[in-house]
Length: 193
Image (cartoon, rainbow, N blue to C red; front, side):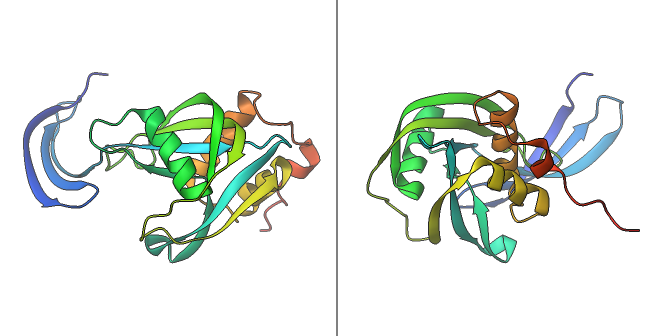
């Protein structure tokens, strides 16, 4: 199917991180629609894997989520910034570590229905402690190394809700970069009717 034909775009709000636009488009099926679109510069997210085979997770305050959530380090691309440079910067800033090696885990579209945001995912290995460099609006209460099986359990139980974290973990598992989790620990309890 071909892409939609953009007939008109109107900037409604220009924010610190992204813009909010109104797009008049002709969809591939010929239907004309007006869409509200968040225009985002993109981001990088990093799945940090320790030498012991554990994943570094952050406990970070997110106002829009209503409090603290578990997630992997991530951040928005700066103008003209290389994806890997963004990943390196965010890993240092948020987790306080550097890495010897980065594995490309591909992209994900966290809000494809209404946002242009594309998050590029990396797995980082060969971690070394460094000085965490939080920005003033980054409230991270913990950086914790967790066993892969525990992270899987937290995803299945809903303790980890963050889409980029779930996607990076899944790609790491499916790509064979993470230790295998025993099947029994991956099964959620059956839903009750």
